[in-house]
Length: 145
Image (tube, rainbow, N blue to C red; front, side, top):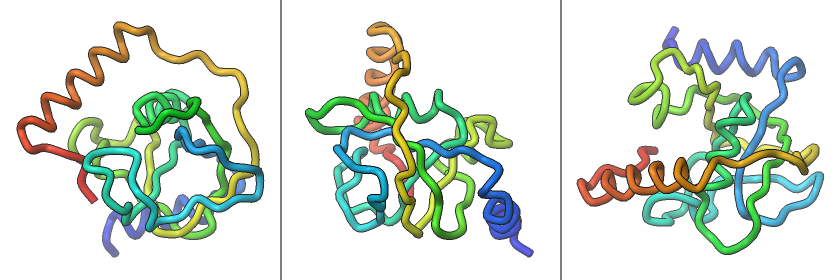
């Protein structure tokens, strides 16, 4: 069996024992679904073929802080409605073994709550990360699908 499919099955079978987060600037409500097909928060703002979530608050904070848009940064607690798999943007390229616990899916995530109090990164950390992302963009390297 393909390793990603096996991982997706293992994770999906253990969904009720794990808290997942989604960082964004979108204003959503408990019970709403986050779905593919909307414009991505990253890259060239194309329609997203996948949606992303993390089992770590740290990764969700980066997601919220780096999301495009003018709204306030938000971190939602989400529940996958179908299989999830490792996020290849991070796990294959930057962090083998998935220590960030970052995943993606083509199935909706249901919002079950919101993390109201969290501490973001320092302005210097944000600038460093945004400069790095801009340098990659100038080299023609963007998030993969």
